[in-house]
Length: 395
Image (cartoon, rainbow, N blue to C red; front, top):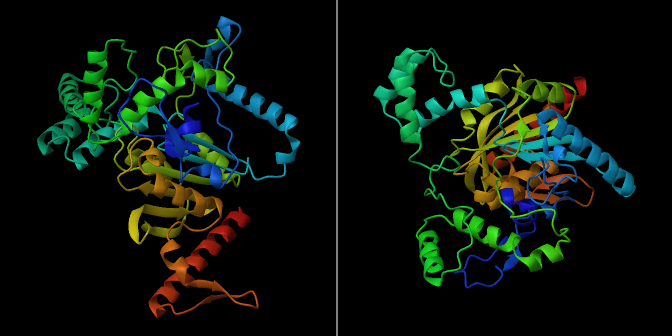
């Protein structure tokens, strides 16, 4: 349900960031909503998250496999009820623990590979010292998830303590332990809580606070047709669900989908410590796909918005500069540009050259008034992109 307003930044609405006065938080239109480029189904999954519920208590006992099957069942029923959408291209999208192709952001693929790259990432961004990193390398034998000896455990404990000092969802943000606060009736207490949120450098946590208030308001529930008695308190990230993680790693599924011809956009906020972009790069490289377009910057408004690389089988990986764990939420403008270019089947790096394109009367694209170097660069990009399509067709 969070996606309808702004989880991952793709929803059509967002909160007005203003001091809370006790009334229902106000919503405004999200100018970077992905609903402008596609029809989107927002689904609360697994059962028990958001406003989803089960009639039978046993229905909450799900895991990776059973939850995925429930999503498939839902989609089949939905398309059966709305057959006019069957002719549309269909993409599956997800963030973190989450047809025609698919889009995933900062995807968790397995605790071992994602966990192992937290240590080198923390060292690379200056969270841990050279000495501590070298101690971990020397004593942990490359395994920073399963402690094997006392010296390794000591180093990892020190590393964990240092990593706990930052917000792992975005290491640039201030930490906030009250992202889903309990309602406070005392006026002075509410004012103190508000002051805590206003002191935050980034507005992310305050948005979570407003979402808690908005989702748990009776007017909201009535407008959304939430059945009374089905869901108690709405919580953004609900812990304690009887969920079984019965898929140790999803890497083989990514490999299977891409080699079968499904387009894939995998992107990572480069300031996420939960699923560092280093781990995502590592499992993508393990596929040994040939490189169609080398690592390069992609731009928004003439500025580097991140970096990207295109592999065979139409697998695109991109970083979002300054992005966190939900990078479309933290960087909505850049996320919107990235998603639209990919859905339009355009290469991510070329929009800085698009203003020079025009359509001639004969139907051929022309470059009017463009610098020669930009013309050549544009042509090189188009050739690389066509080569990627040819490789996909050959496979």
